[in-house]
Image 1: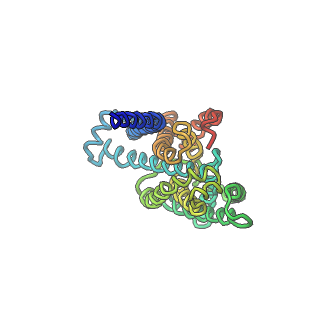
Image 2 (image 1 turned 90 degrees about the vertical axis):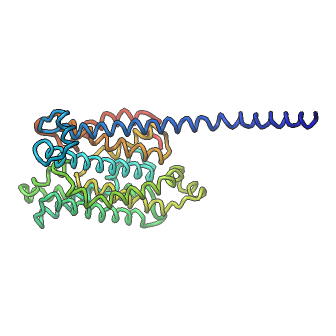
Image 3 (image 1 turned 180 degrees about the vertical axis):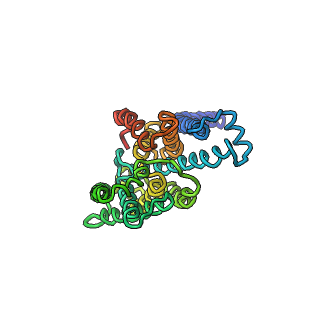
Amino acid sequence: MTVAHAGTHAGSAETGVADRVAPERRPVASSNARRLLGLLVALAGLGLLMLVSVAVGSKNIPLDAVLDALAHRSGEGDSYVVWDLRIPRTAVGFCVGLALGVAGALIQALTRNPLADPGILGVNAGASLFVALGVATLGITTTSGQVWLAFAGALVVTVAVYVIGSSGRGGTDPVKLTLSGVALGAVLGGIVTAMIPIDPMTFNKMRSWNAGTLVDRGWDVLGPVMPFFAIGLLLAIVASGSLNAIALGDDLARSLGANVTRTRVIVVIAVTLLAGGATAIAGPIGFVGLMVPHIARWIVGPDQRWILAYTMLLAPGLLLVSDILGRVLRWPGEFPVGIVTAFVGAPVLIILVRKQKASDL
């Protein structure tokens, strides 16, 4: 009887412990389940948007004809339009949106500034300067040529910003990186603006790129940049765990075992590859890298791993929506996607920054 009585007490104690632990575990599991469900919904929405992007264009093709062209590729008529023009453009929009969104999430986490975007490291300024120099001095006006000029400029200027932000007492600091990027970007932007009046006819040829566009972007410009996108995305995933610790401050991050300097270097390289490649392909497109991480943070909270996961789906969706609207609103012409993202992003961002949950890191 004594043993049984003791066993009863032991069972009651275990049950009590389980009752105390279970309420703490259930909310986490439930929250992760909701986040995963949200990811699946976002994935389905992105797939639908990609189909709409393939179906909508300057040539009016019925949906059944689009589906038939997707199923039977012939290289002529509607099939040519779908496979050789719209699908490559949709793929470019997906990759550019993903790259800009992830770069924005990384730079916001690194600088602990919820209003930072990839341009803060001089990506846009460096790309614009090199494209302008290539147009003015070498006469390079082709899209494929400008892609490599823009990518080289983004790389060179971002490295320069990091070197400047790392020099002096205290080493690398998020505030110093931000100030260095803003200052250098302003100087380079002024140089590009000063160059335009010298030869306005020549610089008119880069006006479309400078506005941010997906027109005439296909596999020829996306293919060479894809390896850089893949490396940048892999580095972003590697750094995501440490960014949670860095958000608490450098000293606390170090006490938790995070290598702050290594994480910063990884993030800067990832941002350069992602945002530099996206800018090289489509020009300087704003608001995607700034706004989408806000939306993701509003949905899932401050965990950078979930923010990156949501950003990878929401950012391409935003860019594709903007591209579709640009084609619809001015049919049979179109507005550059960079202009539409500004009109779509500004009011949404104003709403989001007023929400404390979205604004806090």
